[in-house]
Image 1 (cartoon, rainbow, N blue to C red):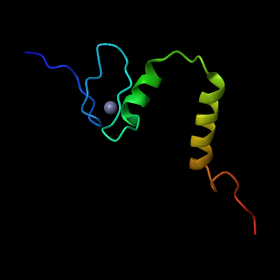
Image 2 (cartoon, rainbow, N blue to C red; image 1 turned 30 degrees about the horizontal axis):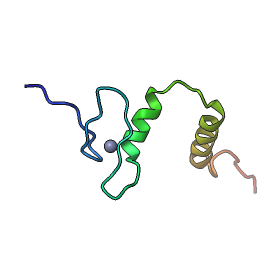
Image 3 (cartoon, rainbow, N blue to C red; image 1 turned 90 degrees about the horizontal axis):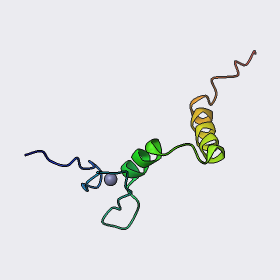
Image 4 (cartoon, rainbow, N blue to C red; image 1 turned 60 degrees about the vertical axis):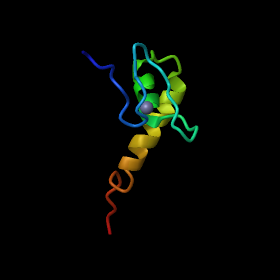
Length: 69
Ligand SMILES: [Zn+2]
């Protein structure tokens, strides 16, 4: 008997369609949110660009500018 896939973060079913579950404390499940975002078409390219920018800006911090003495 096949089991429905459940989110490892909130333990609630992730299907059949994309859904946004909530944690018992009322917060949106971050794992479900990420999964949902991945399935959505890029309807908000500006906000996605901001997220991407923050990510690589953090990673590249201090690495991009070799300072000469
Ligand atoms: Zn979840």
